[in-house]
Length: 392
Image (cartoon, rainbow, N blue to C red; front, side, top):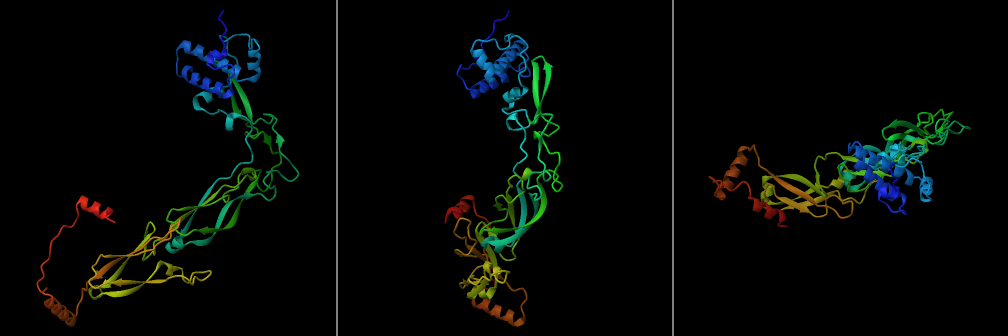
């Protein structure tokens, strides 16, 4: 007759080990000796023994009986290894439970948090740069006003499921070479809730929520960029059973501007000037991005700087950049970017006889009647580009 083995020794734990230590030891050994991993016959016997040991030590009553010197099953560890839960084997391999709820025990809650929602909001560049307040119409789930989220018709209440007696789970037992394996599955009668609504609310069908149109006011902060998401806490869908609402995320999509382009917090634009203005110099008055906000619906903005002056010195070259500090987009965390203006010098393509004669005179005065072009490298070497990149 095979000698009975000590379950503490089989799992390699102390006699005062807590439940977490016992479960951890069982998981480690089960992964090592499970027949699907190790088909050796001795490993199968070992797996039966450690499963039987875990069945004893994981049950407070059986563990106490064993500690008092009792023979818990009377068959030792070489017997069938009666009735350990398949859930514990699944725990050993996946670190979780085989049941339908968290921990694999107990009924599912009817009241759950609602899902988050995402909607798209199209805004102009100026609105993204300086902020805007918009009203949004959303179609979402709200608490049913008839049953106030209970899901039951007025005057009725949920009743305990007769199939699972409120547990939300039903045990299924089958025999195998490991002994009796018990699995827990959600109760089909109550769908795992443990209760049944015999008379559901006619408006929500027992869900505790209905679809509805709502109007929300959303404030878009200054400095948002294309793709930025603004979170509106608890403005998403109400959960089943009238549970707490999820969050609503507003994703910003910025329309292309006809004049300005955005790079980070900097604004870029190009101004075209005639050849004479670039040669002689001039001062230009140009509109700012803030000018787009003038005349919009709502309170008039009277403190905006709608224009700026750009001074071009004599001899300004095409492609030259002029940086206006602090005239770009405000940052979400403070500060403001720059406005970068690139000058494009326009060369006339059609000249009348008088204009052509004047240009010939100018060329003669400058000694450029037969000007010779000067070749130079069209690109810079790697070190030159690095020097330019880190030179300021």
